[in-house]
Structures are given as C-alpha cells and as structure tokens.
Image (tube, rainbow, N blue to C red; front, side):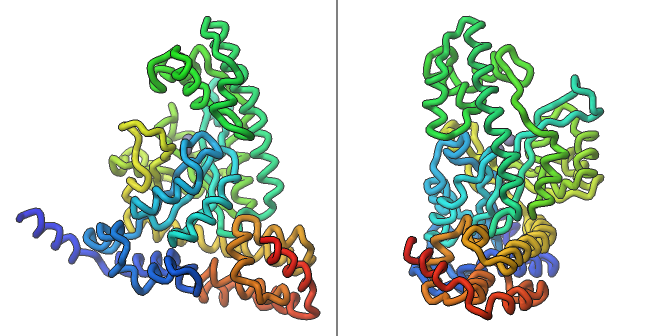
Amino acid sequence: MKKKKQRCGNKKKMSNEQSLAFKSVKEWVFLSQASSSSSSALASCSAASFVVDDFGVQKSLVRGGEKVVFELHSHSKFSDGFLSPSKLVERAHKNGVKVLALTDHDTMSGIPEALEAAHKYGIKIIPGVEISAIVSPSGEPQEEEPVHILAYYSSCGPTRFEELDELLSNIRDGRFLRAENMVQKLNKLKLPLKWEHVCRIAGKGVAPGRLHVARAMVEAGYVENLRQAFSRYLFDGGPAYSTGSEPLAEEAIKMICNTGGVAVLAHPWALKNPAPIVRKLKEAGLHGMEVYRSDGKLAAYSDLADTYGLLKLGGSDYHGKGNRNESELGSVNLPVLVLHDFLKVARPIWCRSIREILAIYAEEPSDSNLARITRFGKNRILKGGSSLSCGKDLIDHCLPLWLTREEIVNADFEAIKLKLSSPPVNEERIQVLVEAT
Ligand SMILES: [Zn+2]
Ligand SMILES: [Zn+2]
C-alpha cells in the first residue's frame, strides 16, 4: 500500500524540466514512425499512440511513468555476440527497448540487418561501433592498457566511411594475429587448442576475439566455463593474453569526431587507472563515458564525468551469452534528463554529418556518392521511394526520416536541394536501385 503511494508521489514529482526533456526525446525517437505511412506495425506504434500502446511489452513503460528505453551498448554475431542482429532487435523489442545502438567490436557490418529488422518493430537504431584501442596514462608503453571507445553515428552513418573503415579493418586484421598468438600461447601451456576450432566459433568472416578463444576452451573441456578461461589464462596480462594492433585511444576518438560520431568511453571500471586516462581522452575530444549499469549509477565514475564535463551514459553490453550473470538487453535505466543531454550533444553532430554526406552527393551525384546515403538503410530508403525522379526527391524523402522539421530548416538544406533539382541528374540510377531492391 505504502509502496503504491510512493510511486504516485514520484510520478507527480516529474519536474517541468523532465517533462520538457521527455517531450523532446520522444519527438526524436518517434520521428521516422510519425513520418512513415507504411507498414501496419508502424501505424500502431506512432507517436500519438505511444502512451496508450497496444504492444503488451510497453505496459511497463506507461505504468512506470513516462519513459523511453534506450539500449546504448549491445553486440551481435558480427563480433562476439551470440545473436544475429535480427534476433537482437527482436529481443530488444520484447524488452520494451525503443532505441537500440548496435555496437559490435570494430565493425559496422551488422547495422543494415539491424535496421531492416528494427523497421518492422518500430525501433530506432543508432548505428554504432565499439573500437578497441590502447591508452597509456603517462605515455609510457609499460603503462599501456586496453580501452574500448563507443562511437554513435547518425542514421546515415559516418561521413568519410572509408577512413573509419580502414582504421577498423586494421584492428580486425590485428585481432586475427592476436587470437593466433593466444592459441599458440595456450598450446605452449599444454592446452592443444586448435586454431580452426576458434575460427569455427567466431563464424565466417568474423575476426576472432578473446571470447571466441574462451568459448573454444570451454567446448574443448580445458576449462569449466568462460569465467575460468579468463581468470586462469586470458585476463589482461594473463599467461595466454596477447595484444593486437589497436590504435591509440586518442587516435580513435579523433577519427570518431572527424567522421560525425559521438565518442564515449566504455566500461571505465575495467581501467586500472581511470582518472588520468579520462583527462587525456577528454582532451582528444571524448564526449561522454559510461557510468550507468543495470545495477545503477556508479558514483565514482559519475563524479569523474562531472569533473571533465562529460556526458554520463551506459548500456548493458549485452552479448547474449545466456548466463545468469549477464545484464539483460535494455536493463540499464537511463533517466530522461540523461537521454536529453545525450541527444542535445549528438543531434547537431549527426545533423552536420548528414548535411556533409548529402552535400558530397549534390556536388557529384554518382552511384558511389548515392551509396553513401543509402549505406545502412538501402531497402528502407528506396522501397518507399519508387516515385523518386531526381536527387531532390531523394533528399525530400530521406530527411524527414532522420531529422525533425526544425533541424531540417535550421541546417538549411535548400542549397543542396537546389543543386539536385535541376537538371534531373540521376533519374535512371535511382530507378535502377529501386528495381534492384
Ligand atoms: Zn568493451
Ligand atoms: Zn561491448
């Protein structure tokens, strides 16, 4: 009885600031659904029907007051997660997640599949990647620590994708060597683990990581579980540990900033010496750090974020391992003011990056520049665009999916559209792409 009263009390206490933040976050989250006329699933999931929703899973959102669930850290089979991007999205939907960032290690290859699946459920995807890097608080190599930097991009993806992809593919190549080294070290430790076994677990085209080595060790019966594989052999600096060819974290952060992303330090609690590292990364352009977990906000890291004026974020880091210790997808509770602060920083960055990608296309409306626009959402963009007759139509079709009307007006896309409206430059090209999907 008492509890109930308290909950009502809390609900009433939602301040004016919170209500405004909620309104603004919701407008962004339900942007593409509100502007889309297609698909029945979407129609029932529009902004207007959000509060009185018909999906059972959303009941809790309504009951717990006004809330939109963001999951900002998750992995799929494209790195070391166990679920395909589609399955991950399905699970996110079941858990009431409305915005999902897929942040596979050192690859964005799972994003198109995630976007496709998310469209069905009315979930918004933030294209992301978790970049493996190294950092040394003093610059001395003996103090080097591995560190993970999360990057969040606009729906259109990174600008200058090739530059980012080169950095990522170098890391992936390094991971092969690293995993090979780990297997060799294990073999020397009299654990005859087979390289083929590790590759088989990682799957075709996936760069094997420590978790894949650990899984192979469990399957081969050398350890009882993943935890044991790590605590005995594979921990940082452990007997079978090996470093790869990761870039400096500062370099990775600058790359994220230069390609229109938001850079966030992942799980700072894994660092031995977080304070000087956070200071160093802030200087390189870091926007935020994880301080929220499914067990709540971590005060020490929250203070550190405050000291350096960083966004306070967090996510479950869900891998779908299926063990009880793992935080569930969507289980990290991010307050609405936190989400609002995140979007306040991210949206102008994303808006600029979309503008840049479109401007490149307007300058030279080639197939390859069109592919930049449709990199992650090809089917989505072109399916609904069968009546597109010129580049301007394409832009008119895309922008409301990605940006609010206000953003579109403020960022002034008119010059870009004008360039593309006459003469109709690539009618045939768009037609070809539509037919191909
Ligand atoms: Zn990580
Ligand atoms: Zn992760």
